[in-house]
Length: 61
Image: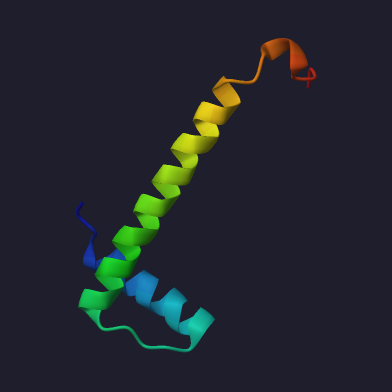
């Protein structure tokens, strides 16, 4: 997975604002990749779960 320098810098900024900790670039890269993988895993699980819901049980919108 390729993460741009701009995205790493943004992750460092958000991490610092939320946790008050300054991450080195290498650690920010590792944590950002882990976060993306976690989100991908959860998204796939939710999509699979939604696909298994019978359509007659979903109320019309």
